[in-house]
Length: 336
Image 1 (cartoon, rainbow, N blue to C red):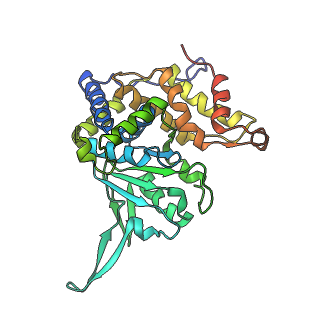
Image 2: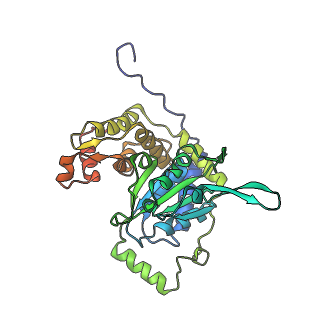
Image 3: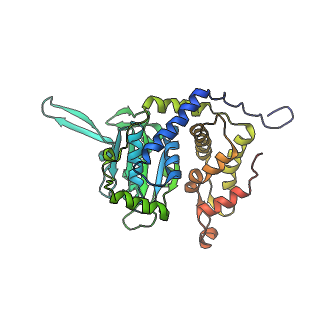
């Protein structure tokens, strides 16, 4: 506290060097240009996925089958020179199928640790809610600590390790809803919707001309960004400045979700941290060395809505988390 009793104004981070911000913006433009060779539309989802990759935050993609969730993850991984692996989550999937296990080697007469598919840069957890809680929890340590405890040893994951998980918003039979603790590990929850009429016609035209979603090489998707450039973009994100009123705005938005009578469980401190770093990453990717209130408002939905549990009254009214969050945001004054 200051002598007058007011809060101490946080020191802004040093202004991001122009060269670093330029690299971050170059990463955005080059990666999206490559992904668009295979994906029509979904620009907002693609930018948020890239934002998650820059921050090292995990992303939950929710949408009906066939809206290019898997294709976007595969194309993005290829465009940024990242190793990509996919796990199809099923009810019989075991933690060892994700993390790995020890196998007896007949030649050496010893147990050899065989690493699972989680040891990669970009991991696609396809239909993550089809696996039981025991298997889902195998991801918790990896998502939070970026390490895996296996057979008494702790193994560090790739510095680029990011989980892109998918789930169907409609189907409930044979699924296991993600617990709040795991949902809280996701930086974003992105709603992947249907394409527009123009975009869907463009998709049909591309398939008519021979486009095959399973062959990204034939589609012309190339590695346009190196891992070194990605790491430079991360450094640029860390240096993005945020003024005291905007930082306070992040806190007030998150705190407001805890005081609304229409929300039973509001967002926790991790949500505020995620909203802050995501806003800094978005600013860097868009070529700006500072965060604006518009950045925070733009990202509040993807960052916060999957962390909220509505009150019984709100549920009876048929309200959705997105609608209630919009009400909460409208009640918080935006800094000028």
